[in-house]
View 1 (cartoon, rainbow over the protein chains, first blue to last red):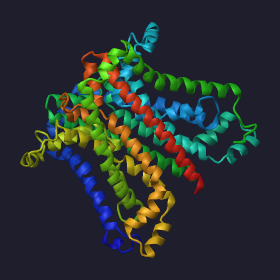
View 2 (cartoon, one colour):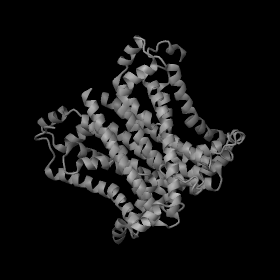
View 3 (spheres, rainbow over the protein chains, first blue to last red):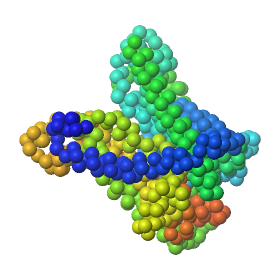
View 4 (tube, rainbow over the protein chains, first blue to last red):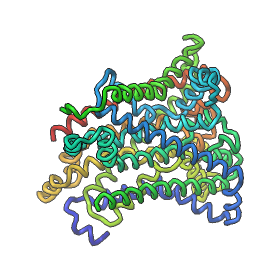
Length: 276
Length: 277
């Protein structure tokens, strides 16, 4: 770092970096290190026993399954919503566009109890779905709906700018050459939005995996069935089993980083592919 | 937008629009309607009673305190971090940006957990706190710390892309002519980022006032002491006091709608400013 400091044209490098690194260390890095410090006093056998416990494994499974399903639903509807909001004009478009960020602004606990009420047996939608034989509240479908709710803005907002800035000349060329709309979409438009879609998908997936507030109310929290991984950590904490909570958290962190890594690798793969 | 013959068939277009409106209505509008409907279900009197409850008031104050603290700390951090990352050359810049984004990627429950593992009963920093006669876990400082943590990258994330797009030519010219760092920031950089900065503050406020997971871990749920508005909603709901839970929720819904409106106004301003440059 010292070598590069001499090259800085703009003054104030020392103090800016100093404040940045101090705050980052105090609030993020040092507390995060506690996960490792505490884990090292736990011993590997305790760690392994905790994270391979049947109930814990079921929790990871429920979390991963529901988060993945929700992220796929969000990817599909995210593309449709972004497309409709960018390409078409219709009444209340601005209102609907402004509404997309609601899941960021609405506290998750509020979303959680509202969705639970909506989809419970007596709720507005739950009553109707119940007659069709579909139970949503206190099942995995309920968890997925809550995860779709919190994830949708990520996908829409990453794709929207790409669609807005897209150069229309290739589309026009394809049109002149006689390609149909579906073919134009899948061959020309989709490859353009794919990187943004992947990013949005990854963000929605990561958020859904870690989500707690909006999910716990609608999940019903039945062990092996609708108990998500963050709730397992909460349960361990309530029993003052700090090592157990720590172990489960480390595995969840590993999942989160694996997802980010996988998405990054896919991006790099596609970049190479398109360049060739 | 002068596409003439390269449009989808009308039916496809209308179907997609209908699908979008239906999705947004069911997923986003109905939950809001439910909150307000349930809050007022048993009459206006009960509603007023629930939102003027003593504990609700205390929860509102604590939520406001935690939000203000988060906005202040993250403003300081956001401005310094964005400035450091975009104005200077140094090694490991990529690593720094990844580290800043950590709170964004991890579960809020884990965010709460790390402070328990640091300052709680088995935390390595417990001795230091005892020597200082301070309490963090199951106390107000814990709630504030948790809130700061989950919103930590919000402001820097909004400012960095704007500064990257602007480049450093003006700042470097000013530096060569002898201007100090603060003067450069005030005269050149800040006018460029003011809308992005404001936008970051709005996002930070929204997340801070609504934070549930991290705060839930650190709170200990001491009524009137360590309960924020979202936690108050949870407590009332778990006591089957649904009307009161939805009444308190309605306060948060109103705040969320206000935030959405402000957000849209700022976005409009950003687009206008971006169009001029």
